[in-house]
Length: 332
Image 1 (cartoon, rainbow, N blue to C red):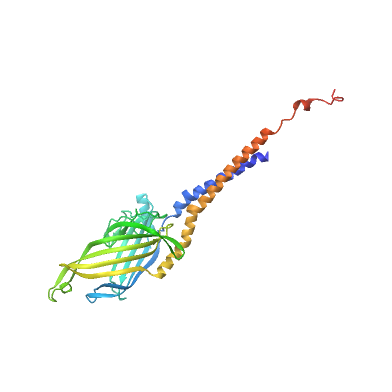
Image 2: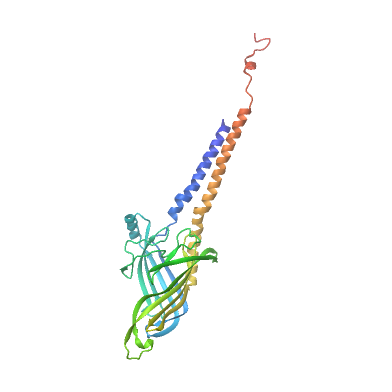
């Protein structure tokens, strides 16, 4: 009897393991592949030899330019926004300061409230999204790429300077401190985005010519090194150009090739290398192993059941007449 029970046990174990594989893929992974609402990180971008307009001395200058961006998540606001919208929402507060001389007055700075989908990284238009206290309607990716980033050209990335999302193109794969990354680039075309009052003599006028309203133009080329599993930007370069224009004349406002500092990159790799490996295991490795093993056990149990059934059919039946026939002498 036990040999007939064995195929059933094997198939039950196979079904259980196969179910576990599917649960890893379709239940556990979607719940793990989300950005935290309590994020607290600092990213530093630096250019040791930037060229810029020195507002303190009202003349062109050059030197080290450091931009520090701090992000702090708001779990309570994120939870409330998720309940109101029915989506999985993250709300992060971002503050960014650019400093060219180390004094108490920064060269530039901004604050933003970022609202986006915790799975895809795409902007969500709701719940107090703003820049410098003013409401703004964003689109595209804001701070990271989606989980399970694909090598495609369909993503767009929000440019906060001009307030518009621009396409991001996939250019290949590179290894970064032991992690495989997808490399994406984005080009922001030359765009007028502001007007600033400047002394007229900066554009060839006399010292007594007074102030003029100069248009400020901006262009940028970004390169992202992205962990395809988590979608986190591990390293980034911005090749940025800004200039003032007035009456056919130009004045350099900013020319910089800024990159995450080595400490920032190393910190990103250290934090996300293990997280990426664990998430990849839940998304792909474990589901594949459990699915294959479960199917093999199901097939093995089925085959064993068929073999046992054939053997049972092939076994000869006892001769009932011989069993009932008595002893030739004493059976009478």
